Amino acid sequence: MVFYVDNEVSASFDFDIEEIAKKVSQAVLDSEGCTHEVEISLIITDDEGIHEMNRDFRGIDRPTDVLSFPNVSYDEPGDFSVMDGEQNVDLLNPDTGNIIFGDIVINEARVRSQAVEYGHSEMREFAFLVAHSMLHLCGYDHMEEDEAAVMEKKQKDVLDKLGITRG
Image (cartoon, rainbow, N blue to C red; front, side):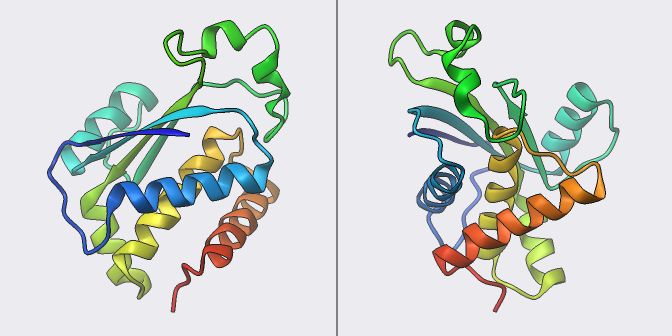
């Protein structure tokens, strides 16, 4: 896995952003059985930056905690065989041969405020947002109640396995 980090706001936490993001992302890919070499971009921004992206790309005129921009179009969530088919040409980085998997955008301010709100560390909140976003990059969604339950369980399982709990 290749991970690109663009810390637009020079966010600083008491953990290494890239280390935690890679660790959680790899755990999600492993739990989903993705054997492809992938490239993921992570942008750390602020309320203003994520508000602009949310408005421009999703038509939602407000800031949020995390945005996910998957590059893969799945027939079924977690079915990575689509990356071997016709879409493969559009997904490959010609320089590396890796799948350009997608982009994650995290709002630094929400990491901090939601950690306080939920009573856990900023590292746990950041890890949760990465896991959540990675599942979106794997084709999962939470628009329906049953979909949300699947995502919640997968997020919890990955974070529990890594020992990143709410406590």
